Image (cartoon, rainbow, N blue to C red):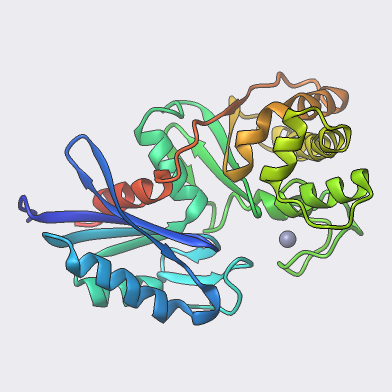
Length: 298
Ligand SMILES: [Zn+2]
């Protein structure tokens, strides 16, 4: 039984930062942002998480965790993650449950983000919708009538759909994966080519240059949009969704690439384009994780 001092915690473990907080009446309270520090390993991060939670008032009555990678929900394992090298077959659920002394549920980070979007009615609770996060990689979630479709466990890994049979090598072991063409590193590469400047520019810097109409930056975003459009055509053919929601770190720059994505889309298929941008909220993943923990435990 929960009492007024029992808290539903949510943890969003990304390749760079980990955000945690809990649900309170009327919303979600972020308590800490930690450095994930992948080379130090998952046990080290869990110690930091434990410290934050044990210093907070109230005892955890459930916790949910979203993590950037392949998650075996039934076994509670992080199977592998390109963004967390070396974190393989890690029993995240059992370890968290041990240190927090409460039931824990884990899922992929894109899925917990979608749970927040469904709960806050940003994604409709009827129909078939796809959510796609554009950042370091490409995450995906399939939502049908307000529920996430998992298939036999891992549905929605759109980033590893091949768009070039003999294309760029991907950390997943395949070649030509979509996220090698329409995520952060690809954008930086397009800019490098267009500007004939070998130094690294972050997506944020390229967005700034695009905002002052620098030709190379606008061309890099055009190329990025083209590849985004190609992947979206494939997804429309597979799912015939009511629409798509885009989110993630690159979405702040959507004004520079959505038009070219839409043109590419119309060049290749006759579906109607219904691609929307979700409001950006860096705490949404942790909030979705807390909601998932509250709903799926007990
Ligand atoms: Zn891949």
